[in-house]
Image (cartoon, helix red, strand yellow):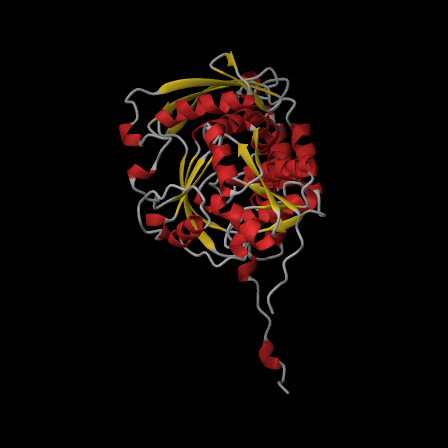
Length: 422
């Protein structure tokens, strides 16, 4: 039995101005009989022509277009906390799309409150992760808002279907040749899916990349870059203080020129299927590498070890849309508590897709050359090592004295033959 549609008076739509979201505007009016307010978020995907975008939204049937420039908020309150955590999903993905969705959804809720809407709508498909990220954020921030996901309801299944629907409803869209790739762009990264990438055996074609040079075509001379951190937060590049968003933008340009930050990954989506994606994250890759190097200098073993475990959970929470949760906030509290000494400068050499450490320094450094030498020092008497090793290896010694094998795999197995079957 078909699910009945909820009663909606006014809906705020996450709007990009592309074919899909342009078609969603009249579809919402036709199927829900509601007023549609379009919301466009700038998270660094490129400068929008607001005049053209607003005209297009109104011509599609929207009552108004609201635009928020969120680049600085994105960098300061989302990218940099994630950077400090060290979160990377499945060893490779720096979570560019994942971390942007809760911010966009937060502003969707804010705009809904501002205009008195009782629902929000998004253009995420029913196959991907974004539907979860948008909707969990809305549920966390205002569960009273209704959520409409047209891709889970309508019978539009192709670009041709969408163009036909747009023509029928006089929606102004330009029917251009669509890229074979599905892309998502923001301040942190550019992602590519679909097309040739649907077969993970295929090597990505060079023409696909847009913000990074191939290592083969990168400059023959390496480039040095110095990044200064204060309590885990990057604050300057090559001695120049920059705002969070400007700093990421600067490193995107520098890193992209040297082919830094390309990743090819077969990942596990939250909905259960695998997907093959290619990501370009030049600035983020540089920042993560530099941050790790500084932490290696100033954090003790136990703190660093536990923080690395927490980073895996932080990445999962971000990827799975659980940004606005008590656990993510608790992990931030732990991470921030570790970041006081993560203050200093890291110098990297960028060369043909490679990042090489060229130096690191901090007034909170735990490295002392005089402690690390093999000479007899007051801080470390080498003769003390004998007692430490005896105690550290005591369990191994006891096992050997009892004639037990080192590996549990070599332990005797139960003999089930002596038990009778009924």
